[in-house]
Image (cartoon, rainbow over all chains, first blue to last red; front, side, top):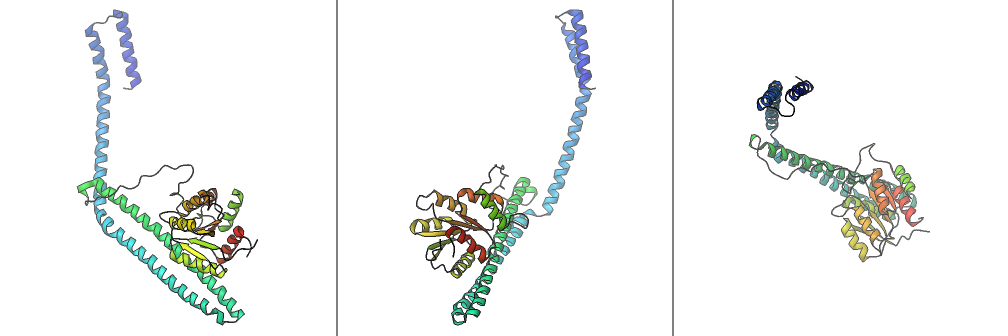
Length: 219
Length: 128
């Protein structure tokens, strides 16, 4: 029975009572109205309750399945072993490339040191070549920054995994640690942290020419 | 106006390799007085002690970033007129706008070449 129909029935009943007794209604008649209300609402309430129970049961099953799947992923191992190992490997890459870059630059500086002994033409060739090598060596700075971003992402994942472990408690492996950062609301002007997103991938940032144009527009 | 190649230039970057690259490129441009710092606060200390004619700084450093250094420099009565070039991998328009609003003299995106470095220095200091 819809709510509108129930309201109509009750209104009709009250109107009849009012016609018969005026504003003074017998207690027995009030009880009849209440009984009518209960009878008309009861089946709907029981049905809604059954539906809620069914949905809660389905939700509980879903949570159980999710817990089982999460446990199978061995989140504690992910947190304690896989993620720190990956971060260490990446740090080692940065270290190795930095070392290689410095070795290259040692050699280039040695070449530059000997350039005075060459004639003008050879000196110019060597000078241009060493400049290009210095420029190319800046790859280490870029790759270093990219890898640092990846390490930060791994730490974020570690923090989220930790949260899952804590949330599910003893049903998964034990875990503890700081909560993951909650998403910050986006302000109109980007914060300093939001401005630290580089190096941008191809197509994300703008070129030196575009930067020059933008700077000129802002003058 | 010609560039004074004897002026003190402060290069700021937390990657020592990048400092070395910048130092070598500046030497090839005949700058003879190049000093370095590895973050904003160390740079600020040096700037307050010495008489620098140009700052070339990275953005992404800890604990004090390049943009924070720039703001500190522009807020300091004695330092505020020093030309300040940002050399960074941050290449989004919002970064350029934020740097400009903070008073940057010019902006170079990494990776860069020697020609770009020379052109940007010339744009703030004069011709070589």
